[in-house]
Length: 303
Image (tube, rainbow, N blue to C red; front, side):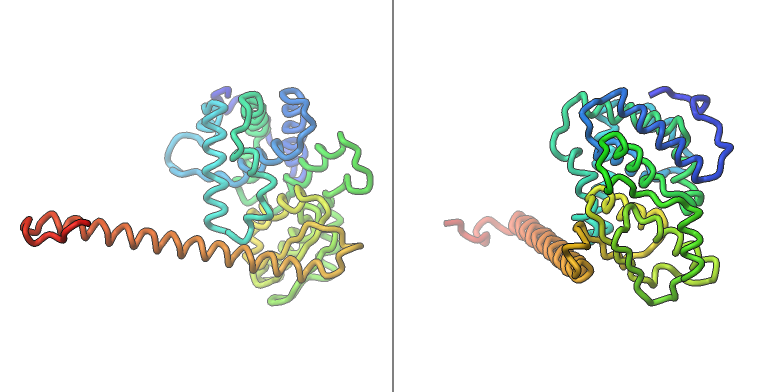
């Protein structure tokens, strides 16, 4: 990747316009580097850059560090970022899986290179200045990226997942959620209405992390984007997201709750097993150390 802040385009527009510029850069770079028609990889790249954090605020520029990575190194860093997310938020594992699966299935070199080129385009368009700052609360970058990618495949009524900020803001201020309530969106897309509602709550001194946010969408990538957005927008941990058709599955919110409970149970079981294995290994190591210090005639006999 080119190693210079000079390649970044000037940021003179509002956050939503800035997000559109980044999304267009991602879409253009992806189409130029890879013509497979896949939407998961370029959306994953944008989501990865949105989740990355500056490890050392006083260190080298994060954008320059990312630009300096090879395709293989960028893929490895991406795997680490998604692993950290899953460890921190196991309840989102099944939701974000569509965005991370390509990284854990030994992607072809050409695909890794295309992802790297797409990341470079996003960085040059100033993504870190949007998703790495408080401006992320004012835009739905992932929703716009997904909309542009879907527009090329003409998927009919399911093509639009992005709700313009102006419309979302009006709706949110007309009916701002109270704390400790539930907000449902049966056509949630990437969560634009959730973002606006959370901002309206903050303006009125209310805490959006107290709300249970429940959303459903037929597009698994939209739900995955919504799950990542819930972190970027500080919506808290009460997320109930479900992939399905609300016209067919009227009880989707109940199913979302069941899925969340199941994945948390599995995560706790895995953590418990890891702790048990660690304890057994520690005990075994201690036994071996004690045996080494014992006189040979006092050591336990081996069968």
